Length: 244
Image 1 (tube, rainbow, N blue to C red):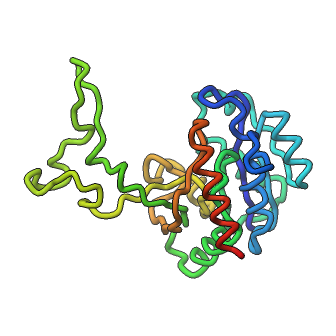
Image 2: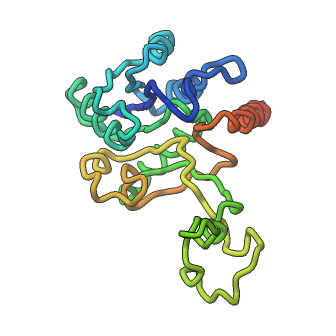
């Protein structure tokens, strides 16, 4: 049994209604939901939410609803804890062992059925891997370029330059430190042990475990701000064009 589990709650502060905002004629959350339903290896799709609108869209698409408990619906609640709750709910409901979980977010549309199937096949081929995770290259956001404010309100390095080696060898070229890969939150395909032993996982997304296989794509992201929507539209249009 391979189950897909989407998370999406009501009450977003930064971008209210982000999970259901219309993008190219569909609610944002329909993209990851349909990708999961279209994946050859996925046997069932579940959506963990407290949002009535998300529940309506879930029902319309024939997926299963998990009523997320109130304590997992606050701004302070962690997605990893909602994933753990959803995993145990599905396991108890089906009363059978789960081979893999396809973890998705309702606000991340940059995912395809093909990538989900690819991740499943990678994990089946190598039992030592904990997960297969979508990543995108964002060299412009290298930690070398990150800054924070000091007590005087001035910019200082977020990470001491010595962490990157000899500061004399560093420069402003965004590619100088090699590719900078970010888990773009489009999909995490994980073994149950990652959620059963969450505390052993690698920060900051502990649900991915320790041995993480990258599923490389371009410009993946989860939407937290309205200004990100044009980038998602570009991704979706580009994906549709490349599949012709």
